[in-house]
Amino acid sequence: MLRFVLVTLALSLVYLGLTSNFEPANIIIGLLLGAGMAALEYPRRGMIAARQLLGAAWALPVYLARLAVDIIRSGLIVARIVLDPKLPIHPGIVAIRSGMGPWGTALSAHAITITPGEMVMEIAEDGTMYVHCLDVESSGATAEEEQAKRRALLEKIVT
Image (cartoon, rainbow, N blue to C red; front, side, top):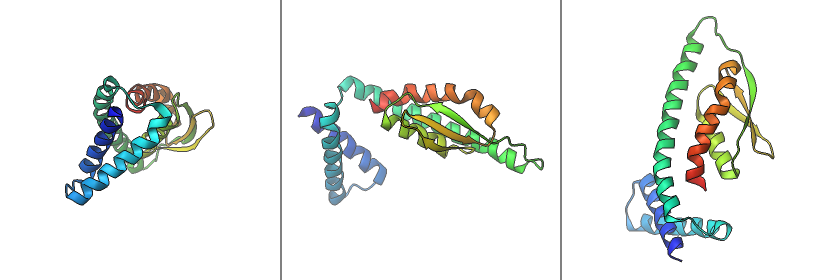
């Protein structure tokens, strides 16, 4: 029961941080949402250990910082491609194995899609993501390596 309460409080704090609204009504809504999400997750996994929570607390900001760097870097690359009069693109589709469960795959697909120049078009039953790329040669060469980095961080956050 203590784990349920801790997860509820953690999720409520995340909600309050995202909304930046600390009025009593919003605090109650945050607690209700946190309890609801914890209740949905509790029967499935039996909650998470404190050690896992600390690992996730470290991995989340690292993941978000890495995602921000990827978005900025890719945005600059796409801008250079678009502004080049020759428009040097080599579009294509790359298959990337997720190697994670549904939550990890969804977060990974989201990270890929919000990065300029790439978009997840489909996710197969086995978790393989089919990604459309502006430059299939450069994206294909680094896709598995980038997914391994995402997977290492997301496994700490989502497990």
